[in-house]
Length: 278
Image (cartoon, rainbow, N blue to C red; front, top):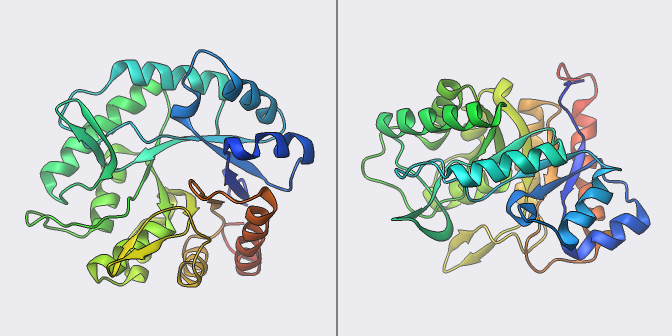
């Protein structure tokens, strides 16, 4: 078995804090949103510490803005490192994007142009972050709704080049691959086969919706059938990769998410029997 494999997890949300403590559900691990716990005290940290005692955790951020041309936020990195010392996560991830301009956070995950200049710029910043944190990080592919005229390579080639040049890892969001493939008319299977398997440490699964024929990564719906099919292809391609379901809005009761997690298990486990990654 892949030594880093955690199994099947959920995003830890405050709606479920008490249920997790009371029921100890059959979840292998939880992913926390880093920014929610980069605070001095209060209920989030109280529940975090109690749940962390029973479950492995990973940290996932939305504010690193690794693709920005502005200086890295050392204060943010210091807080992130402090939280990691408290949580002892199996790994830390964020997104391959930028989140604002002129020191204004636009609260969105904005895609980058896929150019050699951008590869060099982002890889250098990832190296700085990893040196500061003292560990490798994972970068997640984002869903996108625009492209740049200056892009010279595909998204998967860009993601691969950054990961290899910076020696970081990849959080492959299967729903984001699907959403972007619909919006930009590429074959999502080609994306999967364009990413190096040894770099992929985690999968995300989530739901999306359609607005004026555009696929939008809303994280407020169950995983769609086409994304489940793509997930099956991803398991065949990459083997035993820690998988979790993200739900950030319209959050249902915990049993509904546990049922959805069972779908992921049901898809993956037969494909992993006798797999070389096990």
